[in-house]
Image 1 (spheres, one colour):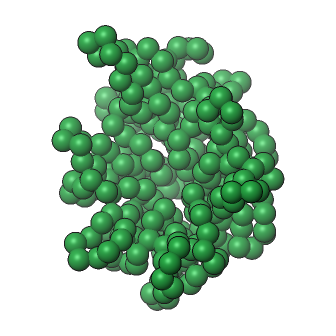
Image 2 (cartoon, one colour; image 1 turned 90 degrees about the vertical axis):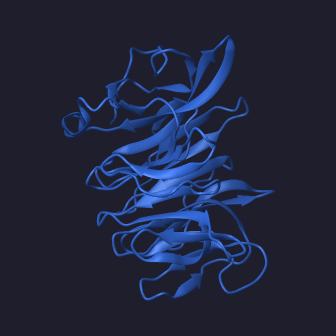
Length: 280
């Protein structure tokens, strides 16, 4: 496990080349999208969120656009795509998201083709995360007030049967991970197999085809005697040499601290620990 950032970076996504994009909070309260390879990528906005990246380096994210009534799903290559949020992009340029589609009213699960065709994959639904494989399969977390929330697939049907799934991610070959919320508000991270990967509080995760996983973890600092919350950005990988060579010496990359210690120097607490001390 490696800690990539100890503050102001959250909602990370990773491609198969190891480039990580994330939402970055600014000192003036605005947000922007940034990359571990390319630095800051967008101008500041109060509404920009949820970046994703494919192996071609194309990045999608949501933001408010002047003259449009709702959040717009944008691409740094193609510009505004459609009214949407929670977007994910595959290596062909297809995009999954939530949005209104062509039907006014509550949001639906959407799939955007490279030719500009927009498909409505569900009726009105509350959806907390989406993902799309390189075969065009869309997975998503559906939130039902009676049955709870679980991971579903447009090709494979219901994939989890827990009722308390918060978020998920799927890679290009269809493997998925997910977080679940317990009554004590811990948000645990699990592999598709049910293996517990993170025991604590894991934010919106992502994984690539190599099984490298990124997510954010809350950390707490004491500032003038006041507890102040922030985020650590964490990478779990079975290929540590790949990332050590990439990030070493850049001032934003450090190996995991000993078990039980805060993730970040100076923090008085953090949201969890790696299970069994290893990734896979």
